[in-house]
Image (tube, rainbow over all chains, first blue to last red; front, side, top):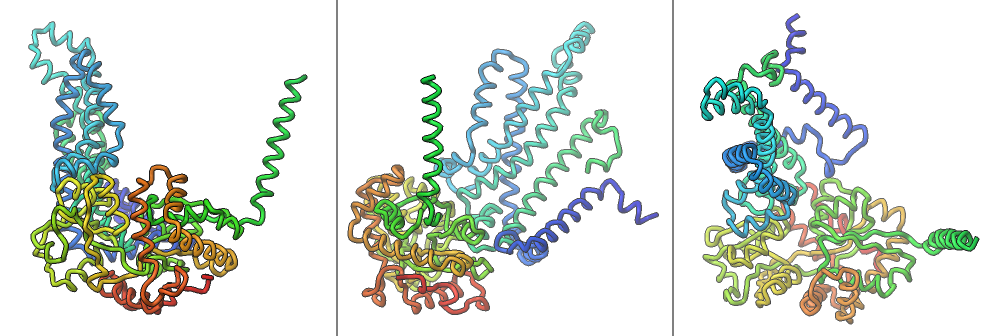
Length: 262
Length: 331
């Protein structure tokens, strides 16, 4: 009974899926005899992850800082801009198309210029992470603020609520779920942005490790770095989900088994 | 009625062309040569050989594809997506030591083209001048791996200069914009790119002048190709040998052929300089009298020593020069 519960416990479900995928990965390599210089086997990746852990951890920190910096900037800049867009049709018609336009510029193409403009430090990586993470926040927040029903606002107004109260009691709570889904997409993209920045020019970080491992055909190390990158994304996503749950326990998306979405 | 005749005529022509095309290509081997990088002066001999019909004459229908770094090209040849690769041979050896079924069938650049370079106005002419300066390099590439040996041979310490790391483009940008004074690059590649971008003269300090010598670019093939299509490989290498020889003799024509095929690959006059710097490396003292691509095995052996000491190669996989390079397919 106990083992059965362990096997089907919702919190562990993704873990079992990961185990299955790793086994599938290993089996496919064996079945199709995929050589290790094309795709390494999971065991060699795990070994490298353990053997190189001190170095990997040291290089994880700069990437994490760049990710967090870029994400924080996305939230701090993205949400106010989105509110501005949602409140004013004029601003929307001016700014929104420009944002979409800027989003379509491939960041990889302009990333080398960030190094030229801002040097080899943390700044170009934060900017790359920001540029990737910024857009989903804006789109989702605009969507959130616009989805408030006019009748609700009218009712509030008729009962004498001032604009600040309407914002705090109706608009913001209504927009929060959408804002959070934007933030969650943003944080995973910020990881990608940070690595793009590191690829282009950096003396440290997981992007630097990836580049170096690629040059020496150390594919296990490369995959180990990729595993850590994915873990950063997963952890940050989970943190956001916890904050979301804490901020709006009332929301429909939270009304189910607590561990199910973990 | 007339229109229908026209349609028939066109249909017939299309059919005829369709039938003729395979007939034309019949007996010719379709071969893909993947370069180590986007086209620059070093690759001119291949475009020249294709343009002059050296490959056609050997029954080879050659397609030249640009690359994104030697490592990627080696993987493409190992996986069979390209027939031949033109890559940094030490990079290939490292991949082969990890099991990639590839082998070099000729080494074009037998002296190292590696150097550390900056604008001449900075007055950095000898290794001593590097002290206190900033050097840009790409982590994991062949030059940054051998750099410690250059430091050792010249008595420099890591602490005596600053380092910045970035990809190939960032390295150039850093020197052009003054974020770095020097970069690790090839005499016929980055040297020319810096001059093209700024019109300023560049002074390279060659690793080879300080006793750091390593074989460089060469032609590689999959081992399956070598065993299964030996005759085709011999014909390809015959045409390639001729292409290298003729490009050395007629650099202008070789550069023109390259620009005809790849108009954006550079500026004519600096490409010409680059090609001459390339062909200078086709021979060492040992191979002066030989045709190009015939590297001396002693030279390969020394490069293997360096790979074990500085290139992160596992000594257990070192092997003999003949394990990685064969001259059996050369004319």
